[in-house]
Length: 234
Image (cartoon, rainbow, N blue to C red):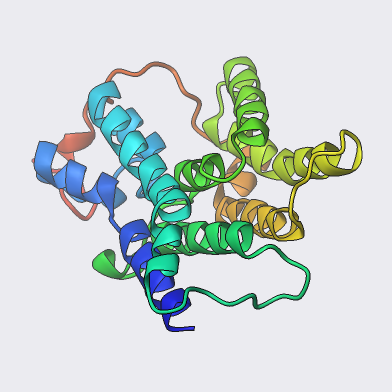
């Protein structure tokens, strides 16, 4: 249990790294949560700061999830006697990977370094799942790109991807016979549901036709004419 607790705490601390907030302060000296959509994530970074800072944030957020599931989870085997199986009939290694990844996503959504006000977890979840089962993630990523290119809504593409990912896992296991552990199916569904819940504001704007589309990867114009509280400056 000690080993499990250590890797869970480490995964949360890594997931909590507020990349978009730090990059926003480094590049423009502002808290990105006070501009654009107000979300501390890669999409808002792309929209406000341009593609270079956006790519940096996207890669960091992706690696937070990947590192937690692929590397940090394995530290448990080097601490004491290693982790124990919590759920009967579940393989220890996939369960440990998915648990550490989920905790990293939670850390991204509720980061301890920035008053628990974080992003929506899509990139971190993609990284986490890539460290466990890359085929299903690749298929989901393809669906995400198709929806985004057709609709120009990143939020809609994220919602569709989050909804379809657990379905892809079920299909791989029960239709194509892939040996996926039960823990991956259950936590995949939990992650998908969590991302959808985090996008509830986007869902409301989509239904009202008020959601922002992706127009280009150039920085938004004029947004720095507002102060940190969003008020226009003279």
